[in-house]
Image (tube, rainbow, N blue to C red; front, top):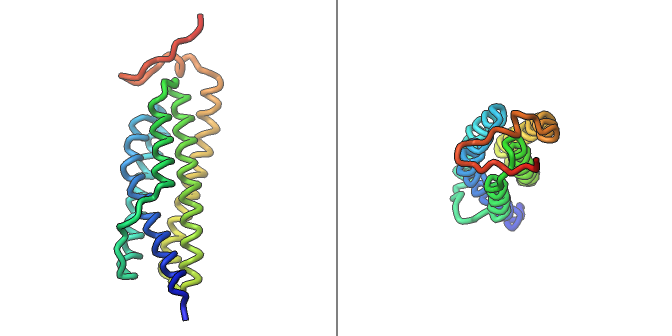
Length: 182
C-alpha cells in the first residue's frame, strides 16, 4: 500500500516546480533583453523555449494524476527572480552585467536541478515510471543549461576582468554608463 502522504508531497513538489517554471517563462525574456552578449541572449532565448517544454511536461504529469497544477507559489524561485532583477537594475558595465546575469541564471539552474532531482526520485519510489522519464529528461536539460552557463562565464568573466576598451565604453541605450576615475 502506497503512502498517501508521500504522494501528496510529490504533488506539492510538482506544483512548486510548475509555479517556478511559469515564473521563469516571464523572467527569461527580461534577462535575454538585458544581456549584451549575443551568445548569452541566445542562450536565454533557447532556455525560454525549453522552459515552455518543461511546463508542458509538468502539465502532462498533472493530467495523468488527475490533479490541478495550480494552487502553490514557489517562493524560492520568486526570490531568485527578484535577485536577478536586482542585477539588471545595477549600473554595471555591459560585460559585468552579463557576468551578473550568468550568476543569477546559475542559481536558478541549481535550484531547478535540486527540485527536479527530488521529484524524479519520488516518482520512481511511487512507481510513476513515465513521470520519472519526463522528469529525468528535464533534469538533464537543466544540467546542460548550467554547463553551458559555466562555459559562457569563463569567457565573459575574463572579459569583465580585463575591462576591454569595447566593454568599458559601450552601454545599452537607456542604461547609465558607470563613471570612471581619470
